[in-house]
Image (cartoon, rainbow, N blue to C red; front, side, top):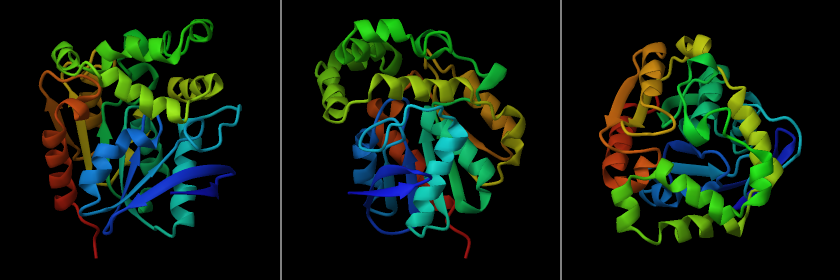
Length: 272
């Protein structure tokens, strides 16, 4: 657990395990604690690096313009400081946008790429509800509701009704992760701006690293069609659709998702 200066800001990061490096990049407004279950599993075979994106957690939260390219440069800066010349890169949701920019702009540092519940942005992205550009950040509404109310409204987007019913304490768990190091309003705003201006559609064919795209078929916000767009644009990408699952599919089917990712990583080790 450390903080280092990278790309002009202080970035909080953690390293767990030994082996080939695996970087996990989280989504909108969340901090690195959201990866705790994956760290426990993946660190048995890999050196897992998690960190707080700018605007969240224990990293700096400058109230300036953010882009996913800048946030990818944060990742590069962190890896350079850690003397990691190449890593497996895994990004979920907004983290997948950042991972795309990293793979396009720093191709030599990517062993393999995993894109989970994400999209390419721009006019080709297919989103609706709370993650559409129109609804992603409503500043006036955000000022009037509590973090708990905001998270409660996200539950149907993240999880299936059956999972919510079977896990009545899921909201409390999410709240505990967020409130220990809360994301300020301007952090949400600046990350939302980065998401809204993201567009890699025309550049996706530049990605040459082995790529796994994984998506829930019932994702109500980032529709599954986005995964098919990504797989059609990234050469030789593997596509896995998880039937009936929503945006936070790893929470509902952790063993299945971990198995899929570990199998992909095993088949794509670093070239010697």
